[in-house]
Length: 477
Image 1 (tube, rainbow, N blue to C red):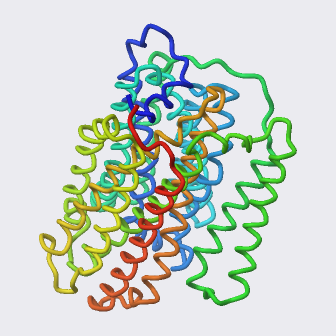
Image 2 (cartoon, helix red, strand yellow):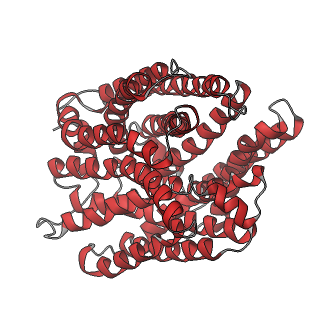
């Protein structure tokens, strides 16, 4: 058994008799991951119609995406703490109810303010769902290492499936129904999950303790302000004083949060958790992986549509080979490789392969085609993502104290989501600086996208180097 699975199994004091409904429960947990990721991608095709219907400015339109990501990433630590205190099953159900409410509000919104409020409520619901889902997964499978590897693989594979499904559904729904249904589609799914949870999910006892609301407010504000500074930097300029003042404000709020946690008797994030072996390295790997992967996926979709001229549905179909490769690798191959080699070699190798795929994509041509310019490079990137995601996630969850499973889940989800937001914002600025603003000019667009691919590759390389230096769990035991 590998160090990863041993460590992951240790904190999960699962009952001797496995739950007979654990695989059904895993289906709901994977569905949660699928929907959380889908909600970040499904709105892309619908944005032009939303802009026309609600009166968004071109600059304000990006906040339909960012309002969700900032609320999601900023509230994940609170979601993890609440999961530990009130029970993961209860928080999982509550998150779905909040997600359904936010989806209704976003669909019914008649102006930009209500639309962004609805998106933020959706993000808050996802911030309750995500850490509770991982905590439930560990509680169901943590005592059975072989099953845990399969469960983490299925959970991980649900993310790319959700991203691709979002592109598909966004195009189909916008074309044949209306933009409002990209939000309404969440409601029946949420109701179905809420009906299934009582009979499927394991009960999780509530623990005594208090919630550090000031800490939650401080870290959420700090993360939100930091993301806002990076997102608006292309408009205000990276050299402007306002950009750096806003960014400094975000950093100061995050430092204030750390200072608060050091003094609280029951902090939102116990700082001692970072003494867990490899926690920092695994979270850094997840952050840099997301900062590379999400921009690659985003700009690859734009290259397919704006340069190669594919429609939304065809663009989604072009991403299917990459998605299928990820799901196959994560479910079938990654658990076996982890058991044989341990997590560290796979994390480093995977991030190197991800970087190689993006460097390959940077050579895409304005007059290129899918088979030559996209397919082989995207498959290499998919292999890299498949190898690195599961072992870094499992390592980040391997904390010795079972009472902090929700906190560990919240931390790793925060790392991934904030990495996604910051990476996409930074690569968007890089692409704009190298020509992607020139809509209708394939050569200029391709130059911008190539710069973004190279920038994302650099982040993946940095992740590989950081993982090699910081993660110690290298071999199977």
